[in-house]
Length: 370
Image (cartoon, rainbow, N blue to C red; front, side, top):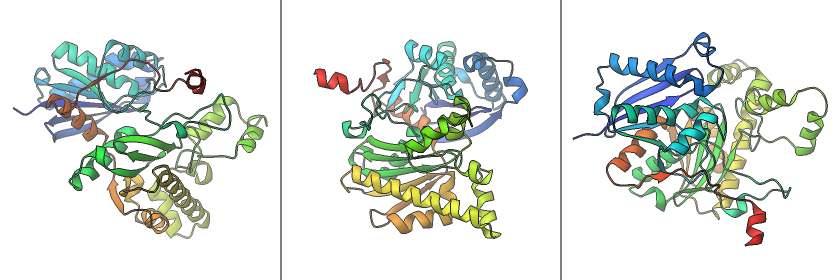
């Protein structure tokens, strides 16, 4: 019999849910939550019962017998770094998600909801390639300050699912290909996927790499120090600028790619400069990820909402097509990735991992001691 999988993807103001029978999506819904509804909850974890109730009502409206569910798969944020893969939600994962030990985001609710539903209605609870996946090689970690090292940040769920799609299209396994995956949305991340692991990744969330629609990307370090001590911003205001209101928002007042495209068509030269610079910076990061894999790249995969932009794709392709062929996977594959990961475990194709909270990298001091 086909496996029934309920997928749960909590966002800041909505919860996406979907029902899959094996790999086939039966339906998908986006459940919006008003600011007034969410204002009742001081902490993200306090929303747990509210979101569960909304999901259950939506499933009931679709005549879903939740007790027949084989697996609940939740998007997962807020955890400590871990290798990629499918994780069966355990008590420690639930606890760490509830306190947001790695970050505080609505996605922290994903494994919590999945575990509660599995315990109440039967089935198993999974999360797939959480946002804290960290598979960096040692060379990718060192910085110019001995007490600071890099950890992987980005969009591993979508990146890895897109890479799997490419491998399947080529009749290969994800663990046998080398691809550069470029996730282009409000944030942009560019990962070097070498034989099934993201060995390096440039993500704009914390101020690396190219600018993005809502993020600054790299700012020269000395200049950033001057800004920090200028008195112009508080700590929180500057972090928000780097992670939420930088990039296109700071330059153009919008993060909407369609709007920026229309402004360019109407002769907005500054919008064109910002747009072209974004493509230029993306291309530079792609080149860096190619170097991370010694130039052995099978393909460059463009995904995310901005991959629908033909002008952006053409600008990037012009600069990096000499590295490897460009393949387009526009949009996001998070829901599909969650369902596919759960299905691999249910079918015995992949062993689920257990979250331990142990760091994947303990720092260079530990290596020196060894």
